[in-house]
Length: 383
Image (tube, rainbow, N blue to C red; front, top):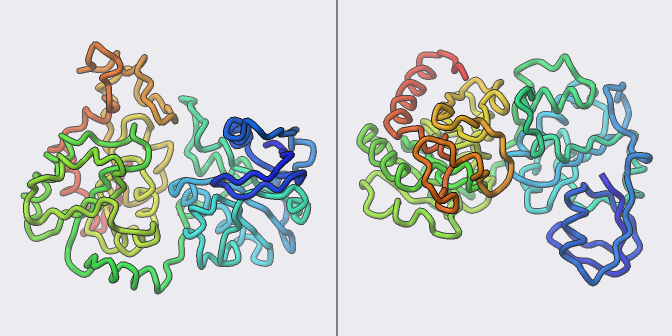
């Protein structure tokens, strides 16, 4: 983490940086700020000497600042931390700082006083707290083959090694308006439906359009009495072709579900969720009666969903000698991808993770059937 100070007013998506005020940002954010404002002089230094890092101390009556920048999935993962801290120390005060775009996820959460606080964090504000917990880098920068599950890493970083497995999952609090807002967009949560998260934010984790189309046809045929609802955001319209001329029980909800909070009741009432490694996969962990069939190529399920009881992961690692490569970038590591089965000669033509592509639609449908059957009989998932 770094302390930054600008010589003029800076307005970026993170918020306002007032001239000559000092703010605490991640190393990555600091580099972004400098690149985005070439006519601004930035003074920066390390925050290490001033950081009062939490390491398992008694928090009775103490104040704690938790920092996690953005991304819905990452916010969901981190939500387990204030929940566990408040269970241990009910009278501790915990504030969470995050990007304003993801603040709504924390609405109504009593573990952080009912709301998050928007970034940036003023250096003077950090002195209000007895301890700080800054999670930048822990989730998005770990590429080690012997890494632990993300929840174990987070808790061990703050000195907690005895957290029960059931606490290693997201903690959210649905609000009445979440349900009324879903009614406004006319998504019927009372009929039987299966969700398919077609387009998560990271392109590298998306199941290819042609395979998605085949999967939708197979699901629609297998579950004729269910709606097959496609959700996600497709700003570049990459899936327009895949969603054309589908069976009558397939519904295209791409970019139509509105706020992320609308997905709480939509996921809660689904008969099953099919998704890549995405935010909805983590959200569904809050609803253990919803079976989740997740698709994996770049990452190992044990890294993320080891403690999710309703998860049925499918991997395609056999297709690529480098899988899981654990690459966190938004562009494929094509130097490695070229070694996978079925890779084209020109690396620039490799558009999707070939380990993920190696998962067949038939295998997904078969797993969906097993997952629905297992959870309906009270069986537990085995990631």
